[in-house]
Amino acid sequence: MALLEIDTLTKRYGGETLALDSVSFSVDDGEFVAIIGPSGAGKSTLLRCINRLIDISGGDIRFDGMSVPQLRGVALRRHRTRIGMIFQHYNLVNRLSVIENVLHGRLGYKNTLQGILGLYSEAEKREAVRILENLGLSEQMYKRCDQLSGGQKQRVGIARALVQQPKMLLCDEPIASLDPGSAKVIMDTLRDINATMGITVLVNLHQVDVALRYARRIIGINRGQVVYDGSPDTLTNAQIYQIYGSEAGELILDLKERYAA
Ligand code: ADP
Image (cartoon, rainbow, N blue to C red):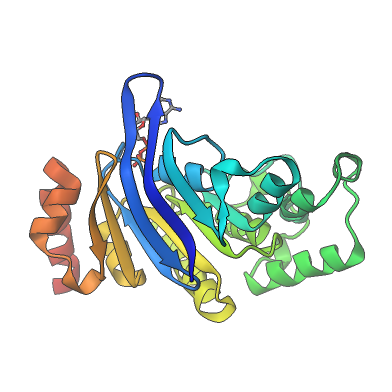
């Protein structure tokens, strides 16, 4: 059975912007999917709808058999704990330590008082430490987040998502603010998490070359519509044009250079 089913999903902002226009696709448990498209295509909106950070305007989203737009209260909170979010700008609390930021990933499991008091069990703390060690952040554990590099901050973001014990990671342009070296570490980390932990990964990417290198499936979005859904191996230059419009020329050139190198 599919883990995630998007069925004729529509999202409007106000009366005018049609950000998602009858989007349909489904994702099986364990897939690694890249969502590509130009800026403003609707990629971020799509992820925010899946996590119910925003309400949809029409259609349906089913996650693990449940209709996401119908979820309320405890069921909605539980849904959000099962989906880890990774953001372009990390969304960390800079004045707090790395470990404190990671433990924030457990807040969805707590009542308000436990959350306010920052009450975490020994098991939760041990797990946070273990995850940080696995991600190569042992030495940074007690540093404030504002002392970290961008690549380290994004690894903290990934650690925070992993302590949630999610079934799926939604990554919204996770490497857009990083240098190529750090971007590679982050993409390799996401691939390892998918391969070794079986966590489904949906990653929004602006860079088509990165999508081709890492994803086993590519969904191309242009102006709120899915215009490609398939293997990276069968994506043609013509389809890249269809996805990226006027931005495509540069991307295709870039690709040829990279693969020739
Ligand atoms: P992408 O992630 O592919 O860059 P977005 O999902 O951010 O695209 O945006 C899709 C469209 O929705 C764009 O036209 C954008 O201007 C619009 N949009 C996004 N967020 C909002 C918002 N909060 N209010 C109004 N319009 C928005």
